[in-house]
Image (cartoon, rainbow, N blue to C red; front, side, top):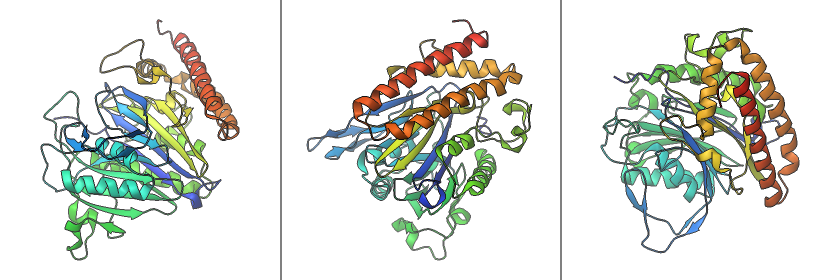
Length: 411
């Protein structure tokens, strides 16, 4: 049986009342199998003729007349996204959860629903409505594993946000519940909604005194306990900083190794003995991370490849074209794939973890300089911002090469 103990994701959100500058902040660690290289890609907006059909991972659906430009973190073999943002500032991330709903052999994956919601929703509410309509019509199903076509599917929870609002959506088969978020919230690999929801699927409205988690959750699956532990940790971190949250804080939370990892000279996270938000290669790993700062006048995304604590977040905007090196690689090591190079550096660092504080400090100094520059770039022209994104990416590659040399990794 597959060992799910180190698999899972964590998604966090803070609305305007909880952030320092009144923006909405979103953060997610996407945890996948350790060989699942994740790409960062942009898909342009498009108008579609009537009758156009759309092929998702396992299903073909009618296409809508217009789809928005989207940027997403995409496992190399999937049509859908683990997390992403669209041109209107809508951002979505998901978590695998397990409920008592019967499994369907074929349906939509949670990753399909993220991309569909981003392509079809001009606001968080529109994305929520598009996703729940698709969920009720097509259900959830299909293998979530590239290496195992027969792997069992799971249900999903989502955080959906835009510059003015945020929602948590939790599903059980074709049924769902949603709650509007105020302040801070986080989800992991177990349901979190009780009786405090704002919207319900038609099939659940007839159930008196419904408590979503109590009545529908299945906690016998391996990731549930890990998810509850990580969710408690992320909520603690969010609540400690509520009212003063910044993109830097959200990045720090995604790099978190728990209380034990805060001790100077702490061992490598894989030997800490408890689930941590930042997951290092074992049964799985954090494959990509996203922090999005959603402002009414424009939203800035910060993306990372592989384990976020051993690398830096790069600034990007959804209207900019991305460097091609962010979308290379598949299930095997490829020296031309930056994702695989970051993964290899992380593994080399694990063998000499005493180097970690110095490596982290170097990335922190550079990343801090990018965060300091970003506000002035936000209102600039597309050409100016795109040039800066590409300059940051080139500098990142230089710093990665220097780190490889420092760690004795052959070129």
